[in-house]
Image 1 (cartoon, rainbow, N blue to C red):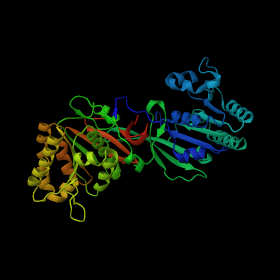
Image 2 (image 1 turned 180 degrees about the vertical axis):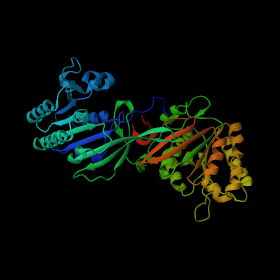
Image 3 (image 1 turned 120 degrees about the vertical axis):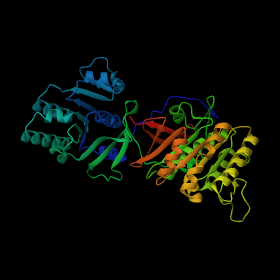
Image 4 (image 1 turned 30 degrees about the horizontal axis):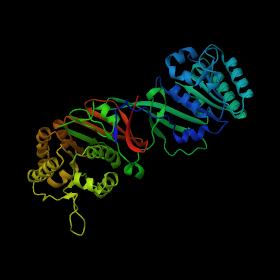
Length: 474
């Protein structure tokens, strides 16, 4: 089935499961802290939206007027009913009420919160920000106020979230039941966001850190990367291709690369430390399936440890045996134990990189002749290095570049950690350099050539098709 292009994916909002479980119990207090612009307000609104169907939810603004809040975040108009803001939302569509307490003193603030929690059954309240009030108090006044508020939420069976921009630990860190810190860092100059679950009383923290994004004005965190059998065996769309381009099989990746891989190009896919093997399998599965869907041959020198038998099984399940046998070849791997070579397997003598390149070229030429199209080549650099040694393979890296350019085929080379010299050599002769890294269980993708920001790799099933989404980290 042919698919069409679309804009890059906006991921569905999601919360860390530990935090969601913690917040589901009334009578607790939570501190959300982090520097300016780290996403505290959007996380707070995500919590309000998550629990709006089962509780009365309230947003108490002490720092920014509701008018300014909605001006800066217009998408929130769909979910807020604001006090003192006319025509924000229809009452029957509202999920959260907004109270403007930007000009009140501490006694008025405590009184308003007390009356709110007294009149409503198990309310869910966000105070944004607590530091805006607390910083105006001396240490004794602040401690008394915080003790009163935490005690109040427990007695009233309310859930209260305090938002703070104070990076250091303060008295409220010790008094509340839970603490979540939002932070920013960088990966090769590209900004990345993550949160730290510092404390969640009576809740098991299975994973303490999560990567998240604020894409589309929503807070969305990412779970640990995993490829399910359902995704591997699922149907694939053969995406429409632009002139002189191979689609990658992922609409998001195609858009990032300007329509896919240029015909005749050499691509380096660099794998960072701790990236699970299935991270790069996800990409090679998608681009291979898309090429086979267009009737192009796929020739693979697999990375060490890759279960090529699984690749054969998957190809047969998606395309059927006849088409898979016509279009898929594994070069330089062992055949079945009974000595009868599989139609998928092409042995090579492993004498020298130059001589074996000729065998690889012959397979490429036969595929092109049989299909009348250029081919997709996938090369595991670690397997080649183990066969020929670093120095001989370093010289051989450039062998296929001209072949790809002349034939209009595409080669994807896969490098792994510990191959820095070979990786640099491959990057020098490649027109595209992609990289995968792992952070707190999330597989992140970016391109070094051409330069891109960070994206979270997300294998999903939509409309009965296995897809690979790339969610921008913003």
